[in-house]
Length: 390
Image 1 (cartoon, rainbow, N blue to C red):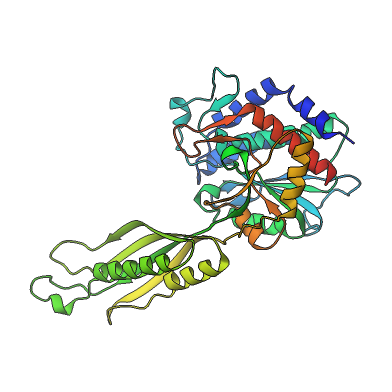
Image 2 (cartoon, helix red, strand yellow):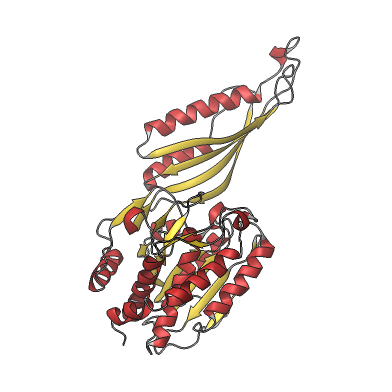
């Protein structure tokens, strides 16, 4: 059995190796929905995990291959692809895609700052540093002759940044029977773990009206645009009346020309909500609209949906991680995130879940995205210590 302090001391000797690996993963760009680049990255990630993993799979989705890696745990048999979900495992949840277009790396290459700790580049914080941390955590256990106490599964989806339209099914499948779920997303400011997340949904609201000449026969028409405007105003009022709710109209299209009553219009709407109750009320209003105009026809389509994961300050899994971090001399604040991720699903299902275990940093999705090397080494040691003891 490896002592947590031993794991941390060992992790801190791997700074140069980690930087090299981190740069390699960042250099392989992975914009969402790029199946070719997802495949290349998946092979590279699998090569790094293969040194310790007992089995690696590449489930195929519309946006390319995802990745699932398995570690047996002490005294457990090798998992079979055909034996269904196994109970009592620890599930690690991560993603490989970034929001950056291919070619960004040429303009903003992976760079280590003069302080010897701050790393910049597209995806260093969200969340390729986390993938390096997992590799290192498993390597630390192997090098110290230790092993995870329970079976471990790592699920890496390739479409999280667009709402996990396919990856969500993979997370749901491997969450069945999980003892605990550890999300490897970046932490909150100050390195705080996430023990709650606002839910999000994207809905397309479409309106079908009746076209007519806007000057000669306007009364014969039904303006889909006018109907859409009225619907959006009503939805804004509903969102404003609900606690911890937000509504954003992201796009609007419709009509043909100024002298024709518009016979079609649609909007893509983003929703955010902090509790299941607000989620239910807001989604009902958006998905079950009532036409203002008699001849207007409304239809809705849910493009993506993540349930609210309400924060529980007494989260026992978080308490275990905080206590373990304390033995390493590390502080782990706790908080709730305004953004959503794949752990929304597991947290909402009541599975013990903590997110934000990636290395500290800031600037996700922006030009100033950066992360801390020392934090990555610490998070890897913490992860290894948790898996070995829990």
